[in-house]
Every structure is written in C-alpha cells, then in structure tokens.
Image 1 (cartoon, rainbow, N blue to C red):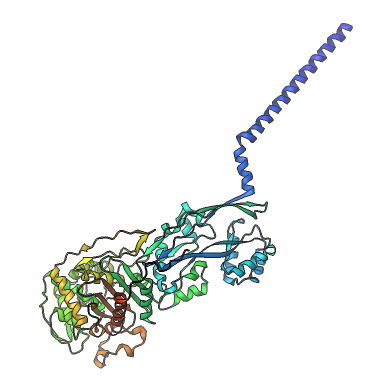
Image 2: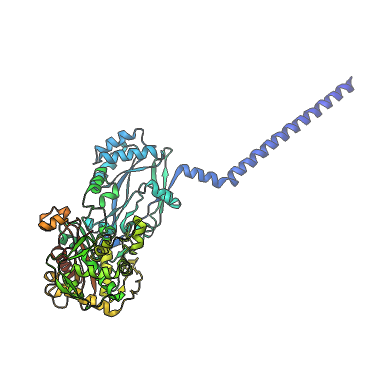
Length: 630
C-alpha cells in the first residue's frame, strides 16, 4: 500500500510539474508575445504612433502663398497685396453656425449675400474645413471680434494678404482680377487641388492675372499649430509663408492709360498706343471700365448682373475682344493690294461722281457730288470711296484678303491676354464655307471700304499702323516687359514682303491726310514742329442707309439716336518723319472719325511725346455698308 501511495504521490508530482511547466510555457509564450507586441508598438511602429499622436495634437496646414505684384513700365503699382484682416468659421467649432453668423453680423458689417454664401459652403464642405466669412476688415472691426471671441464659437480671426488694384477701372481689362477657385478650376488642376481648396486661396480669373497665373501664384507655405481635442487652435508652433510669386512689369504706362480713358469722356470704345520699334503696348484702354476690387472678395449677384446687362459692355476688353468694321482705315490695305498685284500704280486715276453702279445696285461715295478725278494719294487723303470700289472690282476680294492676312487680319495677335479675337478677313473660300454659296460681287466693294464682312480689333489696327510706320515690317506686340526684373526678349521685326516704294506711297498718303489741306484729318493735326502725325480717318456704319433716305437726305449722325450713329475710327503714327508710336482708336457711335476720333488721338500722342519723362521709381507698393466720310 505504501508503495502504491508513494507511486501515486510521485505521479501526482509529475502531473503537477507538467502542468506547472505547461502553464509556465503558456505564460512565457504569452509574455513573449506581449513583449514582442510591445516592442513592435514601441520600437518598430513608434514613428507611426508618434505621428498619429502629433496629428491629434498638432494641425499641419498649407498656407496660400503671397501673390507676385504687377507694376507698370515705371514701377507704378497695378496689382499689389495689402494686409487683410479676415474671419474664418468652421462647423466643427460651432454648435449653431447660423446663430454664430447672426452674432457676428451684430458686430461687423456682414452683408446677407456673404452670410448665405458662407452657409452654403459650410453645408457642402468638410465639417472641419474653415470657410472665410469676412475679409478686408478695419482694425477696429478686427479688434472688436477678438474681444468678443468667447461668444463666437467656431470663429477664427486671422491676418493674411488681400489683392488690391490701386488703378481701379483704368487698368482693369489688362490686369484683370483674382477670385476664389471654382469647382471647375479645382478639377482642371488636380495636382494643386489641395492648395486650391484653401479658403484664402485666390487665382487669376481675367487679364494678365489669368494668363500669367502660374508664375504670379508662387509656392505654398506651411503652418503647424497645437490644437485641443475639438480641433481649436491653442497656439501656433511654426509658420512658413511660402515663396512669393514673380513680380511682373508690364509695358503699360498707367498715367497715359488713365488720360486716354479720360479723353474719351463718356464714349465707349478703345484706344491702343504702341511703340512701333519694340511692340510695347503703352496704352491698351477699353471704355467703360470697371473696378476689379469687389471681385476679390466675391461680388454680389446684383452687381454682377448689372455689369453683364450694361449695354456698354464694361466687362468686355474691347481692345482685343472688340471686333469692328475698320471703315476707311482699311483703305491702305486695299491700295497696297492694288499696287502689289500690279493692277494699279500710284498714278492710277478714277473719276468719282459720287456713285458706282453694280448690277441693279448703286454704291455711293460719302461725298454726295463726288470728288472728280482722283489718283491714289488724293483718294486716301480725301477718303474717296468710288476710287476703292474701282480698285477692288479690278483685282477681286482674294487679293485684298491675301494682303490683309499679311497684316494679321483674321489671326489673333499673340499677346498675354485671354479672349483675344482674330477679326475676320473674308475671301471666296471663307464665304463658301460659312454660307454655302458663292461670293456676292457687291461684297467686294463693301470690303474695299472696310465694311461688309471684314472685321478688325483695335489692337490689329494699331499693329497695321505700326507696320506702315516701320516701312513694311511687322512687329509682335509685347505686354509683359520684365519678370522679376529680367527683361522679356523682344521679337525681331518681320519683313511683310512688300516693295519699299509701295509702302512709302502709303506713308505719303497718310501724311497728306493729316498735314495737307482737304485731308480728312487736317483739322486734328499736331501743329508742333517735329511731332506731326500721319494717319487715316475712318467711319464705320452700324445701319443700312435706304434708297428712300438717300432720295430725301441722309441724316447726319447728330440727328440720330446714339446707338444708330456710326463708329468713329482713326489710326496714326508719330512723329511722321521718324516714327516711334502708333495709335488706333474706335469710338463706338461717335459719329465721324475726323471730327471725334482724330482729335482724341492727337491729344494722346501729343501728351506722350511732349511730357517730361516719368520717374523710374514711381512708388511701387510692397505689397453692307455704304461709305461715309472717313
């Protein structure tokens, strides 16, 4: 028995030992597993968990970079950045966003349309994404909001930069404006989508701000801030404002641009002045203008509708996007086409009795009794329509179109602006493609006096004039003069391929227009010796004159409502013997080119050539037509 008891005790001890060892092994394995897991968590995955903890503790965000400023050729500010006191609101920090905005409106001027816009963005955006609800606050408004911060949950005051356009309406069409990126903007630029989602981010929407946006935008900055469990900022740890965008120097002269618009008065239209040697655009004015500053913070629907419904089209850059019948300013191209084709010589003479029949239609000259016998020089000087009817009928529209295209008609000029129109240079093929039937012969006569289908922009008219001034060499327009102080390369002049004698014949005729008696521009000539201009008047009809009206009497422009009056045009270069500047002007419904448009160009060119040179440091801030008289 005792042996059996001893064997039982021995087996019990062995079982116990096995169980202890088994349990100890299990515990050891568990401990080893825990130790391995703890090692993995604390050593191997430490960076990830530290980063996760930091993400809960810190908020890392991008900062919209300071935008590069834009200045004119003398350093005058056209687009700068000014300090901007602004307010952001987030849904995450506010239990009742509508009530918060209502409280905010009791402290500062917060228009209803801004409140509704903020609410829409807050409802559709991320719960944690802040929305800018007010900007450009005064210091007093900003301080008042900060003093009432405890009663404004979810409101975050901030100091940033805001785009400002000190020249306002005078340079708006060229400089353009910035605004908040739209959904389409974000989808079009997926690489920068995160940056474009920033509530303070603005991008170029028009003008140079749009075409040069990539280099004006700069590089984004970064901010790290410590936040609490609700995501509210406790303190800012670090901040990098990013890299400022490039500074652009434009070829514009802001003072002369402003003067040109003032000289046009209450007329709508456009003025272009350029350096014929370099292509620099000194004036690129469009009337009426508009103030771009309200667009930066978000223009109201009422203001936007008013601008769009204005019959004078203030948002349209008429200098590059206004396409007009050039009227008699086109006659130099027709004359040159006649010379170049060999169909006529400068001595070619036509007898003008005031009319030319074509089939059962009569084409009239602006001078009812006619000009009598006229050669090419006199035809341009006195703007005889019948002479050009005769020349055009001899050679056909295709030859005119060939020369017109050499001067850029029908092709959009390469200039750093959006929405540049090409104009229209019609010919037989163009008409067949557009209308599906052959070219009407009467349209050849219309084109010969710059009416009918032919259209040009004010910029194209200036380029045409510069080519005549340059002796038959074309010039490329330049609007951006320098980037970060580095001069933009000038394009060389291009020989248009005309005989020098033919171009000189055009120059003599343009000289006669302004400086010989009976020239259509004589009364508006520049009388200062050495500064005289050469040019060509033009008048483009906007209505058809019926046979019945001609039988009674053609009504003068002064007798018509303004919207039925002719457009007034004038092109010129000066000084006539050593050309430096070319100018074109279109005065919508201004009446006669000689009476209205030519005096404006005279005054603008005179001011440009005779004023003292501006200072180079001008205080850029840190931050079917029948002819009428030409």
